[in-house]
Image (cartoon, rainbow, N blue to C red; front, side, top):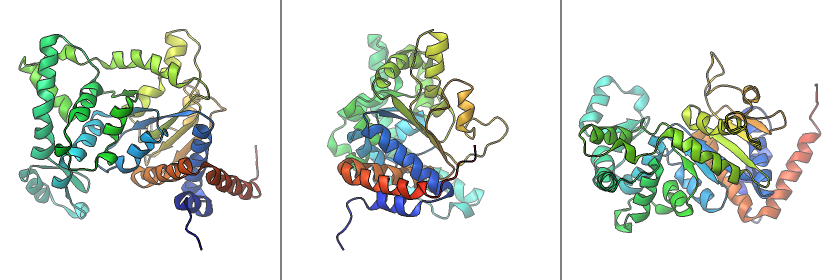
Amino acid sequence: MPQSSLPILEFVARNYKNFNARSTRDALFAYWDHVQSGGRMYWAVAGAMSSAQLGITLAPAIRAGLVHGLSVTGANLEESLFRLVAHHSYKDFPDYRYFTKRDDTKILKQRMRRVTDTSIPEDEAFRSVEKILVPMWKRATEKGERRFWHEYFYELVLSLPKSKFEGNPDECWLLAAAKANLPIVVPGHEDSTFGNIFASHVKFNDCSASIVKSGIEYMAAFYDDYRALSKGKGIGFFQIGGGIAGDFPICVVPSIKYDLGEKVRPWAYFCQISDSTTSYGSYSGATPNEKITWDKLTEDTPMFVVESDATIVAPMMLTALLEAKANPKAADAIIKASRAETRKSVVKVR
């Protein structure tokens, strides 16, 4: 039997029939429909996905034109860079569930910063990057320059010599995004290790706080980015986790409509992968239709929720999309057949 060129897409189409699996399949198919028809997709990435090495699939997806903009936490931004420059020094702790406080104190003394089952090396990551980034801030202070937070990281990663790479550069989403000059916002960047380091240099009067443009300026610039991205078939919203990484960019639609008083196209697709439960005003766990009341989505927006672990679901979806991008005719045939089979069992009760 000849080997399939789309094994992951075929696997999803064949096996993902019900429950969260069905939501994953339907979200994947709709994502492909949207980008295949000329639409764009905006990603919001919360959590510690860079430490979980999402770049293995996200970086090639950016290069393949499957991702057209990003909203990421400051931690995800810097941790993508850390994986590039300090990959060999990371340590894994698969037995973390059984650790005591004393065990974690030992990890602290080893100058490792644990993130669930892996850890970021203090000296090889934070301190190594600090030696490059802080002089950039000081030069900007001397020249009176002002940039967005991510622009410093874009410049840094693009200027790094290959001799500094420990991780595979093809698996660094930050490098891929910088090369593509992808539109990006980093809301709440102060809440990150380098946000803290920057604050300390402001306190020491080494750097001016004004060299980093504010979150308000991020939104003001995002108005223009959204208008450009939403042309044609529109732009969809693919969200991992919740919090500010998701809430900040999705608000651009009602803000343009109500605050600027201008016409705006709604988001053309919405999918969230989250393990947060729906309860007590949680934004992370809010159902997509709640966003209709805030004029972020409409009743006609394709909406999907996958209540699962993004470290499992997102790489699989991206791999299937990369397969489809490489062989679109075969992908269309697989999706068409899967949908035809599904329609036979669908009963609408409303």
